[in-house]
Amino acid sequence: MTGSLPAFRIAAEAVTRVIGRRHILRGVSLDAGPGDVVALVGPNGAGKTTLLHVLAGRSSHEDGRVRLRWDGREVTGLEFRARVAFLPHDLFLYPDLTARENLAFFATLHGVGDATDRVAGTLDRVGLARDADRLVRTLSRGMQQRAAVGRLLVTGAAVWLLDEPGTGLDTLGRQWLWSTLEGHARAGGAVVLSSHDPAEVGRLATRILALRSGRVLADLAGGPDGTRQAFEAIENPP
Amino acid sequence: MRTLGQFVAVLRKDLTIEFRSRDILYPMALFSFLLVVVFSFAFLSDPAKARDYGPGIVWVTVLFSSTVGLNRLFDRERENGCLWALLLGPVPAGAVFAAKVVGHLLFTGLMEALTLPLVLLFFDLPVVDVPAFLAAVALGTVGVSLVGTLFSAMLMNARMKEVLLPLVTYPVLVPVVIAGVKVTALAVGAPLAEEPGPWLRFLAGFDMVFGVVTLLLFERMVRT
Image (cartoon, rainbow over all chains, first blue to last red):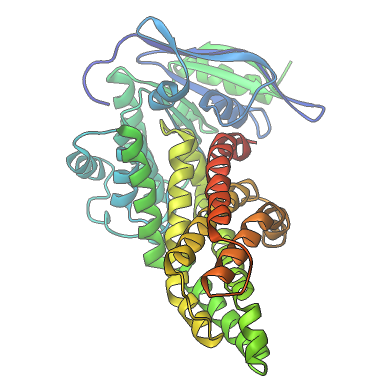
């Protein structure tokens, strides 16, 4: 992300997702703007991943809508996809390209002008400068996760959607990830992430959505109290 | 301009991975070489018949070998969900599709450059109309790549896609093969009361129509 961002807001409005007869999401709403870190918490099967997929445009939805307002107008299509970046479980990296080649490829797709410098800077930032020319296939899962976060950084997208981004990272890696996400929010970006980790949610989230069986159980402000209440809500549903 | 850059980036990425892994080129080359050898042994006992069957063998080689490549064309996009990385990025689906088609054309073209001279040699086919022969191979290969790439993307996540791909692709490609065989037969001097021109125009028309249709259908097919 370079330069200052205009006002923006991504929103899911009463989104319902049905597969067969099963409701994966039931009228779920959320929104995020500059500086926000929205954490989605809930047990397995709560609908966190599906909500992220719907926000990113990877999954369709039967009812409701997803909107991105950017600088006072609603954006769709290619512009939406340039502003919103998604990091799912499957990482979106080519195993037979090096970390550097992967980042350079995605930088080119996003029309990044000074791609070489930007990629080198990003590799340094994600701690992969020394392993930049290794095939992604040969990197550890934690290093692959770092490269995948590098993909988000290099594209310059304002809205980051991350599905359990701490997966595969060691303690130092998680500290690095949290700093990176906080840095993105501080720079005016927005983060929506799913997590099972109260420490991660407590440190990062400015807002917490507790989900269960596709419903929002609680919509809380971030911080220690909100985190405790959110995890209590999903462990002891009404 | 940006779409062109994205097209080049996807194509370059595919070529980089292919020249590193050779997942597509080696199986294609090996399969087409084996095909030519087996056919030549089957028909060498009767040189007159071999000349009659030669044009058909040319197109069977093109079709079967290109199918080997088509089966693997989207494998590298399936791993790590990479196709979605493209579809969720600011890249027109048409740029991705065009890059895939051109990539497949390059692989198939390379395979044809290696094996078709062997077919002509083994089956004693003297090409008297070189431009018509080359035009038929080029236009026919484009048609195979367009239709095959679309179905390859559609079946990317299907079980038994190696079986399904020829089943859905070949019926659509029958007109291409017929036209290709006709022009090849005329180009090697078969005594037919026809001209290659109308068949070549048919192949060009097929490519234009399916170029538009496949481009329009690609995004819908891969997103569902």
